Image (cartoon, rainbow, N blue to C red; front, side):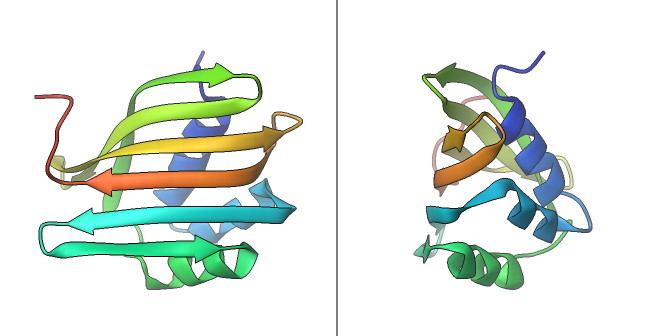
Length: 121
């Protein structure tokens, strides 16, 4: 059993052909911030449901896969360390923190990603 079942499901959906299904997993007062770093710089995506829709519209679909390396749940908040891979090759490490409501909906989401540090090598 996963220590972070909601985040596990979230990233499985994000890796699918229908990532917009994560919109069914958020509360009406949802807020997010995703700090997305590449070798060339960084961009932040933030906001509410519309911010998540904007993020989903600009991202590569079914190209990167998310792999959770470790995780924990503390007082209704899931925290995970993972990495993204492209064609099975490491691309970036990420931390994800999701504050949950009733263990099934995301109220707050913070994700930070960087290619500069790998935890699996």
